[in-house]
Each structure stands twice: as C-alpha cells, then as structure tokens.
View (cartoon, rainbow, N blue to C red):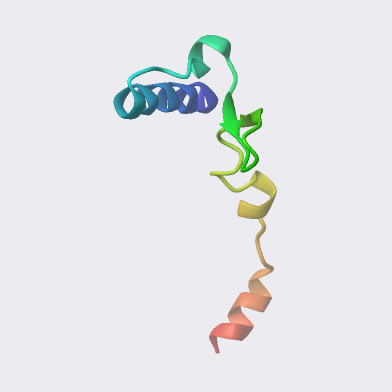
Length: 71
C-alpha cells in the first residue's frame, strides 16, 4: 500500500510542478527518465535515492551501549 501511495504522490507532484504526470501509479513502478550530465537519457528509480533503505534505518544498538554513553 505504501508503495502505491508513493507512486500517487510522484504523479500528483509532477502534475502540479510540470503540468504532466509521470504515470508511476498506472505503470506500477517508479522508473522515470533522467538526463545524465552528458545529455544521455536513462531510466532511473525515483524513490530509492530519496528514502534510506530499511536495513540502514532499522539498525538498532544494544541498550547497554546506549546507556553507557548517557552516563
């Protein structure tokens, strides 16, 4: 569900900012056209660079280490 809400948000903002939708919700993916500094067009994922991966955001420290730093 969250993924489809992200697709909807991308489409909504692209419509508001650029006047056309990127059709992520219709396609069911976040692949969009991007231009490299050399001028070449390439397909890239829109969401991945914006959000941290689950592995990075869910790493928790053992409570003993946190308590030791608080003292």
